[in-house]
Length: 141
Image 1 (cartoon, rainbow, N blue to C red):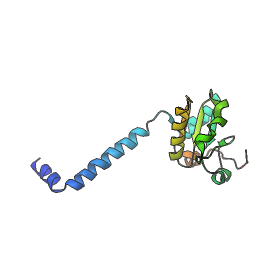
Image 2: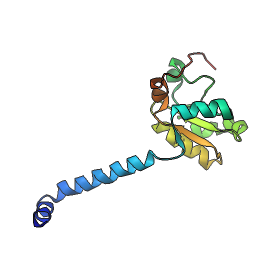
Image 3: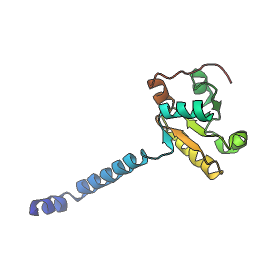
Image 4: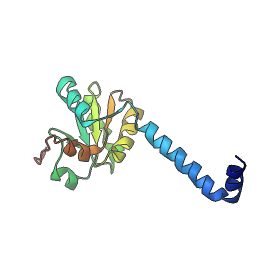
């Protein structure tokens, strides 16, 4: 035990970095347990059984390269100004997707702040959707 204290006192910056990385890793793991973050399989259940609306927040070019069938494209750039487009879907589940799940998480927060209750983030984004071998469309909506 004495050696541990000696090591920590001699390598304070290294030990501080270890603690910081541990805290960030724990936070990342715990945020992955967020109930509003759903898998592609759960998203298909919501789409098929509860008539969920999919909102793709990627830029138009990425959306055109492939998107979830019948999804709406509302790019993150100016997303807050376009929330009115979703007003008619207020009573339906809304699944927000991006390329990997990071930007859609921010869009989910904006939707919840605007009073939308049933908002879900597609964990892993469109990449996870494609990795699950689920269909994508290249048709314009």
